Length: 208
Image (cartoon, rainbow, N blue to C red; front, side, top):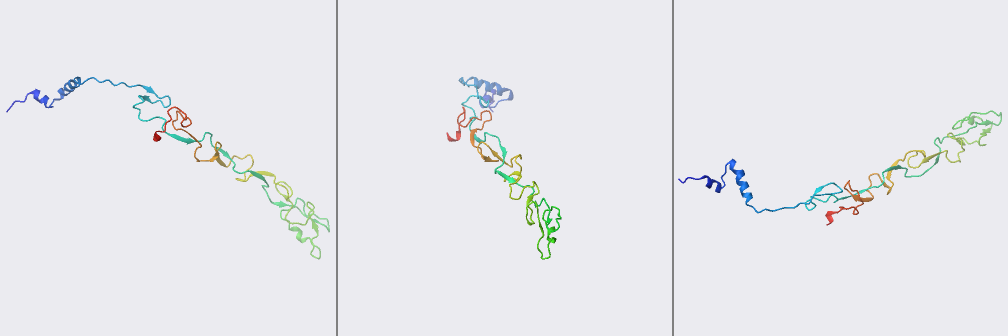
């Protein structure tokens, strides 16, 4: 049998652990020298550092819609004057025209139904309005006559008073309701947020 020398083992790639490193270095030293120059730059918008030719993706490649003004509470409808206690009553009781007696003021006056003459005719009236009308002539909440406007201002939309916080939400910049799409397009990069297409680096790569 032919004796296999160490040189032949190395020639055919059979190496010991302690021989691998020196053999690799030897091969590498025989390769021609190549120099690669990199430019180190830093994006002034997002802070990414490196050579722009090898940056994975532009930092301002997407836009987003937003509202330039914060959401606010408001009342979607105007208001009107109302009576918060719309019950009617007679502030002056029933006066019996036969005796001059007065019966107390009550909400729905029915006590006078017993004040009749022998013919069944009502004998009296309400001095506050000069009528025999049972339904009342004034509002309990303010004593205004029933044909007068309300004594308290309320919103149509929620029936709250004039100083009440708004019952709905909207963006004042475009009047969109809560959850509505933004009205201005801007760069989605938080370090930029310029109006889309106006800031350096704002490039919509999907359209290139």
